[in-house]
Length: 265
Image (cartoon, rainbow, N blue to C red; front, top):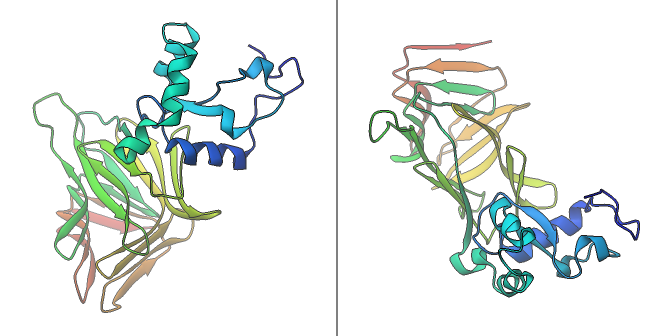
């Protein structure tokens, strides 16, 4: 199947039209809700389309798209689901991280945490943590909750399965990079998934019970407790075998609690 159809229309869809399609579909496959998707012209099909009209394009995951193109499912099935996408029914899009049976490392901005079970804890609540495998040979389990700078939940991970609420302005998954935006060019959370043993939080702008957590892989990190105590830095740091990575209380921010080693460079 070519990149240009008989009307001279390119397969490449502009970013604004893609965002409109993601928003109307709830950021996932209209049939199953999976966040790994393709942009599919439904009626007319791409070969007959003269424009990229978002009203005629939906999100389909690879499995559902394959069922439709192989004519195991009818085009009518896709049209019916497009009127009531799965994500709009459940309230979120979803997928599952792939972690192996070795303890994953987490990169937060310029900081790397290795063999650390609790990456962030705020006011006694674990914000991002890693649990051991349930049985030998099964994967480690990552769980966490992320909120925007108004304190509203934008992203949740439960035992490696993540959910992104449809209330977000935009959720975009391109390759291995997941980006959540509050508005155009305003990124609240950006994750780079590097299976099977690493996840990188390349950008975060989060508020939780009065604490502010900000990080960027280029500019470093800035963490503020509710009483405005601050810890920040731009140097790259590697910490190993900590009991907790970042601990935020009402009046203090601490880093590298009970670590076997930690260094900046």
